Every structure is written in C-alpha cells, then in structure tokens.
Image (cartoon, rainbow, N blue to C red; front, top):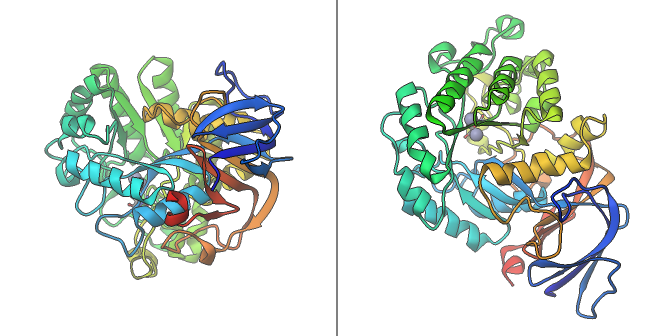
Length: 446
Ligand SMILES: NC(=O)N[C@@H](CC(=O)O)C(=O)O
Ligand SMILES: [Zn+2]
Ligand SMILES: [Zn+2]
C-alpha cells in the first residue's frame, strides 16, 4: 500500500485550521507519512493511492468513549481485534475499551496489555479505561495513579456495568484523579432503587408485561449526587449513557453553574423506545433500558444544544448462549460501533437537528477532548495527524447482522434501512476500512 493518499474533492465538515466549524467547502486532501500534507487543489503525486470523494463528507475520525471489547475473558463474544475491525468499519479511529473484562482492567499492567493488543490489531487506537475500584467491587480504589502513569496513560476511569454506589468512594476517586486530569465515567444507577431483577424501564409497559423495572430516578438521583461531588472536589465527572429527561435537566443546571461535568448518549437511547420490549425480544434488553418518547425527545434536544457533549456507542457484544434467552434471563447490551454514524444521521442530521460539522464535534472532537486524546478529534488541517473518516451522506443501507465485523450478533438494527455510510476510515494515513469492511490485520500492518 502507498504511503501517500489523496482524497479528491471531499466536503470538509471537520473543524478547520483555526478550530472553527467546517463549512463543507470542497477540497483535495493529500496525506503523506500519516499527516495531512496539503489541502486545496492538489495534483496526484504518481505514487499516491487516490480516493474519489465526489459528494462525500470528510470528518475527523470518530472517537468512541464507551466500547466493550470483552478481551480478556470473553473472547467468545468479542476480541480487541474483532472489536477494532467493527470500529474501523464504523468510522472510528479511537475507542475507549471499558474495564469490565475478566480480569478487570484495574492495574497499570492490565491497561498496558489492552493498549498492546490494540496496537497489534492495528485498526484503531484502543485506549484502555481503568476501573475506579478494585475488581469493580465498589469498595477500594484501584491503582488509579499507576494506570494514569503507565504507558497506556489512562485518563478515563469507570466501573461501568456497575455504578460507583458509595458516595465516599466516588468523592475519593474524584479527589485522587484531579492531579492526573482524569475523569470518572459513571454508570449512574442507584442499585437500591432499581433492584437486582430490573430488566426494563419501570412504567406502564413493564407493569403490563410483568417485568421488574428501573425507575428513571435511579439514574437522575445519582447524576445529581455526582455533579455535587464534582463541584465539591473540583474533579471531572462524565455521565455515561444518559437516558432520562431528568438527568439532562440536572446536567444542564450543573453546567450553567460551572461544574465540570460532561455527558454522552448512545444511538439506541436516541432512536429506540421502551415499547420495543413488548415483543420480549432480548436484543432490546440493555442497561440503562430503552425509555419512553418524552425521555428520547429530551436526549435529542440536549445533544443538539450541546448539553450532552458526545455520542458514545456502549457497543456491548454478547455471545448467543448469553443473549438468546427469555427476556428476564438474557444478558444486557447491544452492538453499536458499525451503525452509530448512520443512526445519528437518521435521528439528528436528516431532520436538521445537527449539521455534519456538529456531528464531527459530538462524535470526534468532544469525545477526544473528554478522554484527553491529543491526536484525535483534531482539525482537518496541514500538519495534523491524518485520522479521518469519509462518509457518503446519500447512501442508504439495510443492516445485515450476519455481515457484522463483530463476533457477536446482538444487533438491534438488523433489517432496518439507515442513511449515510462510511466509505473509508483512515488511521494515521493508512486506510483501515473501505465500504464497511475493515482490512485484515496483515493488510493493516503491512
Ligand atoms: N450496556 C449494557 O447493557 N451492558 C454493558 C454494561 C454497561 O454498559 O453498563 C455490558 O458490559 O454488557
Ligand atoms: Zn453502563
Ligand atoms: Zn457500557
């Protein structure tokens, strides 16, 4: 493969050299040695690989703050390699790998192992998230400082899958992480309000189906507590997978007060409603649960106005033998990496709620800033690392779960037709995926 790449005639919607929002102006982008070398009307050097980008949108490579890659421990559901392939196919150049693996990522060595697995796969920057507490047990702080100072330079810490329930532990984590500029990504859910059997939104539908539910207040009450702890400590809190209107209100209030809080929403919480569980199909079983339309409307508005900073997938692969059970017994979680951009295009761009420039902000610039990733979410400008995604905004694709790059098949979008498609993903100047297929590891590292 050539080390020189010419992307010809793309609409530039990522932030420009001055950091200002992109305007969609058309230009050629020449990439050499992993860096953007020239922008404008560029004649192709004779050794260049040329990608015709007529009618296509060029954005900085997407960054996912919330991915479950399952390695080590559950390589039957996903590996760093297969998850990286799904990421590249979906337009991502960096993913943050959640710590709820087996063993848990709660030491510097464990974090470095994840980093090295990502490097070996070569399809996306795999950035480990560190656990907040040892073994995700919620009691003793994990080796936060050692993870932060390791080669993996961990800045995002989360017990995701579980809430940091103890306010004292949360306070200590926020205090401890301040000098490292770290952030706690909280799975906000009061375990005492939800109950161990909860498996969908608590409301009229859960009552009718006879399924125990999570009330929305189990989430918003923890968000309220955490923003007050962030104010008290001066630390940074990030709310993972926000799912209720009340949580959005708390975040809006906290931001207005100057509290250091950020938030993410998943494509599925924007687009899918609690009524889907009436068919008892476990593909719609996810934590936090799909919510009623009032909540979804508030999430869409908050993502549009920037109260919610980022879209994150919460890509949660599960093997068939864990997912294909009666609703009450199935594992929580759904795939997300390969469909995220199309779902955002469907819910946010097509109805005119976000421009492509704002998509670049919510799916690349903001998540990179929250995770303190220096080489992602950058302006499309000369001298910047060439981490890019090329999107066809006019494409329509019917999702085929069987065609996924993920090892798992728990894809809630199967059979749905979605707008916009990732044409190419570029990581430091190398094409990592074309037309929904990631390169093989050998091709990527060649
Ligand atoms: N989202 C889910 O339903 N499941 C996640 C855990 C989590 O994100 O809380 C998982 O690890 O499977
Ligand atoms: Zn979670
Ligand atoms: Zn998660």
